[in-house]
Image 1 (cartoon, helix red, strand yellow):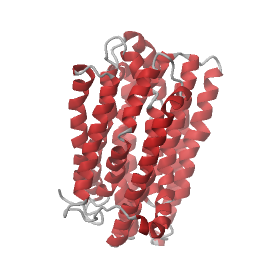
Image 2 (tube, helix red, strand yellow; image 1 turned 90 degrees about the vertical axis):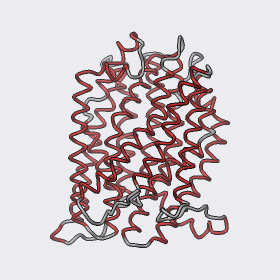
Image 3 (spheres, helix red, strand yellow; image 1 turned 180 degrees about the vertical axis):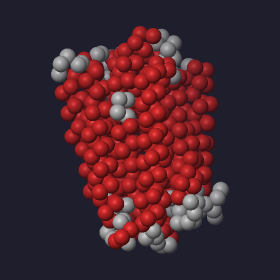
Image 4 (tube, helix red, strand yellow; image 1 turned 120 degrees about the vertical axis):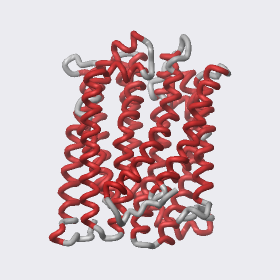
Length: 459
């Protein structure tokens, strides 16, 4: 597939060429879990309880994603910057260091997760009703941790080489397999939630295999290899640099896991097990609808990073403006759609009429001020792409830990809000956190890339 030239040509065209395959890939990647939930919610007699049980696994799944982002999203901007400087040897070293770190961490997570699965699920609010479903799903899912981390963590290194079409295909292979296997295993072989987990693991294995095959082929500009233990001391500083930049992406997912844990516990206290199922659906709808924002942002990231390495500062500013305009327009449309017909989004995941009654107002509350989430994405992406570690980490912690978690704990007890307070925490944090992140980014990045200064280069 054609390689994108990030340094030349029309910026909007470059961003679109990078973002569209990423959008398709992320939508299909989302199907790994979305299709599972769609079918699980329709298992006869136990669908709602099973859906809640799988929802309790989200914090652990998010934790795996957090460690994947630590080295995947942490190293890919650095790799793109080195490509912009035409230092392919260093770019390849960054990719291979990240690959080795991902394999080591996946082994630790698999073993520790299998050993601690039951106590962790109980801590997350599992009840006698949904614990069997949670255990069945999580223990199988964790067996595919290595495949998941390779497929998701190394894919950004394909994209930063300009092969976003190949990156898309690595996800297509797994997603299509998952869609085919889910109904066969869940309903055809009567495996229930265990069948959904088996389908996901096998699909992730195929995606990982596709990633490895491409990055070992002649088409890849950078070749993938496992760094032997004898070379670890020399690559340790580089691993630290990758992790330090990836810490913001790690913190975002880790705090998402923390928020999910706090939400489940609070909802169980004020609304019972059905509200854990509702939060599972709300989270699923959000993942579905935020994917275009993530694709646009991540599609713009290598363009920004490459042009930073090439000292093309005006192109950095224009890239950020394009990303912001598209994200704001999209989130405005989504916000309006939720306000008008929230029930349509709920029905994607459940046909339970009793659940629908409570889920519609919850979803509407949760998506209020969704447009401000676009500001968070644009600010965080710009900081990450330009290796501004302190800002990315600060704003990740600020929105989730400083705002969402305390609000989730405090609002339900105020003014008799109950479960509504849990869903209100998100829009409040979006307005405050998103605005603060974006305004800070504009001030910092615009000052350092001002045309009259020629760009200070101290990004």
